[in-house]
Image 1 (cartoon, rainbow, N blue to C red):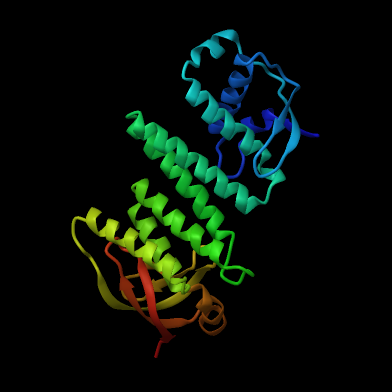
Image 2 (cartoon, helix red, strand yellow):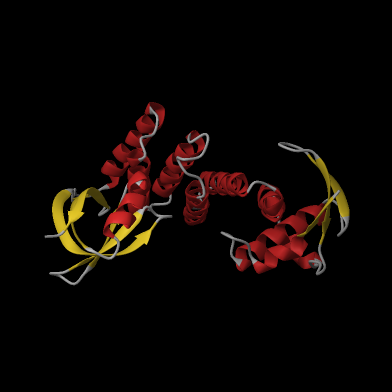
Length: 276
């Protein structure tokens, strides 16, 4: 039998702040208290796996706090997230992070349906951050690259819902640079079309940058170039397949790069060579 100590939520977990973790802990305990359960209750977990779990906690919540929670749907949803967050360490981290993102997305949809648009945007933002984290923990070199593409596409869609248009466009560009299958490309085009509708004006441009390759961020598929003329740093998106070659051939050297700048200001590498 697995023992889940809800107190760990108060300290926060990767992708979950201590404040939000404490909120989920309270919701979980309130939901159990309203059903007549106390610390030490044993529950049968069903779904992707079946197991008996004992939920424990040290500091109880008061009757006043319990009574302050009146929305049974919110108790069920937030409480479910609370137990799932605690159980993350027992699951595959990518799968668990993705599932948390989907939980946040569900809460966003619920909040939006009830007219709580600010709450919905916050949940969409958290869903995007978690889904992006899950996507970046995978790679096209995995035995099956399809989950990687699906997670990138999903993160881009959630960024769009959260109003993070540049992040959405960036994830689309990352995914397209890795040669995804046709069905993913079609979905990405739909996201780009939606981004175009949100854009007030287009700022697509092509230009050159000459400067020092001073930083590589493999997780974000980015290189940083310090422009000699303007003394400004530029973060440039690079296909994952080219990162190793770029590090080997150009690390901390002067380079000349051709860049395509998208409508939301994402800079995408078109070509790179040693500067004369």
